[in-house]
Image (cartoon, rainbow, N blue to C red):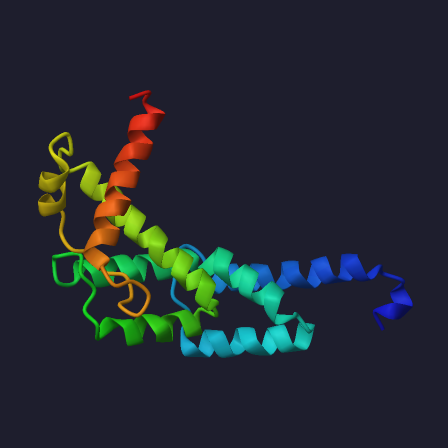
Length: 172
């Protein structure tokens, strides 16, 4: 039927992606976490509209990324130290799957959460002292142990980078 309307394929593709994006945004926008039923509904819509996985991953990353970042921040805050308990990683993986986020997207979102966390630290602590004092004043922040050998070093480096970026922005 669509071919009989002489709609150019690029226009058709953009229209169906826009339809899917609108539905995805209504279910998972503004940091909402998709329920299993909502994810199944989206899977059915995506199959019906014949949207390829790459396009779906991109849309899910845009719409659902904030929910994942918030979940990582909550996991960091659960113990009050900024360290993510190793038991929480399975839950974060399940969440990423439900939100249809690619592994590389979750890694980027994880780093974003760490930047947000360390950024909040730079606004609550004074870091104009010796680097050794800086290192001792920060809580440990964890990145997946399989990815990094020293999560403490990553936190310190990221905090210094955030503080350094802010100083550069202010001409210091």
